[in-house]
Amino acid sequence: MKIALIGYGKMGKAIEEIALQRGHEIVLTIDISNAADLTAANLSKADVAIEFTGPESAFGNVMKCMEAGIPLVVGSTGWLQHLQDAEAACKKSGAALLVASNFSVGVNIFFEINKKLAQLMAPHKDYDVALEEIHHTQKKDAPSGTAITLAEQVLASIKNKTHWVNTAAVNPDDLSIISKRIDPAPGTHTITYSSAIDDIEIRHTAHNRKGFATGAVLAAEFLAGKKGIYTMSDVLGF
Image (cartoon, rainbow, N blue to C red; front, side, top):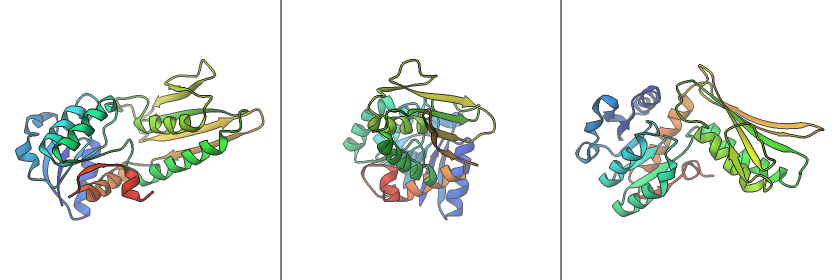
């Protein structure tokens, strides 16, 4: 499989390493120094593109790929207010799009555990729930996309929480997400249900970027040759 890498920082290099190990070929690499090379002609050399940049550039990169009609895996966070526009462009051009806040297989299992725990906790009003996420200091957005996904899953079941806030909760209907930036942490997410009697806590801790990179390559392998909009649940069969 021929891959275009859009974003060639630490994550892009980790994806490249895994992709090469799995027998794929990197035919295009885009970073800040050659952003003008992200063209339809260059993208046509690839079977699939993987985009890991930042919130300021992600949407523009996504739209260029959609206009080129190429299958695209997106790991950038902080741009999802434009997701509907990207999905409309995908359908219009006959491209394929898979956007995830986290590609780690372990995190996607953790998502399923989080949903189930929230459903179990919903009737028990004596418990308050809060989230914490820890990442390295170079992470540009807060809260993390993974934390937002976890929070939205909680909100879907815990009806006395109406919205999340990226600070300590002030009102009873606030779902608190505390964001910490500590090097060299690649990512820790914790959900805690607390009562006067006991606490219930689930946590996922990433030890390195390999899990994210491997999941992104698995997603690219799944998406190549397809059209339409997909999720990591489609890749992993959840």
